[in-house]
Length: 90
Image (cartoon, rainbow, N blue to C red; front, side):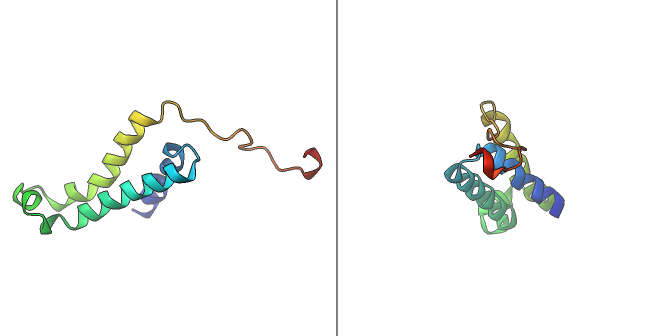
């Protein structure tokens, strides 16, 4: 599960397009979804649906992947990605 969580964080970097505010928004969205997944029993509407707890625990991951699929079309890596830093080329 920790590897999946780490991969979601990498997807957050891609979704955020390497911009701090967008990355923070993605992290907040994922955090809200994760909180919803673990506190669904406190929300009468969700607990009345009768889904197994595993379905609710998958919500943050599925929601983040769906959001990523619709918003990452214009995502581009930084220009210097993968190029080693050389102080003499400044």
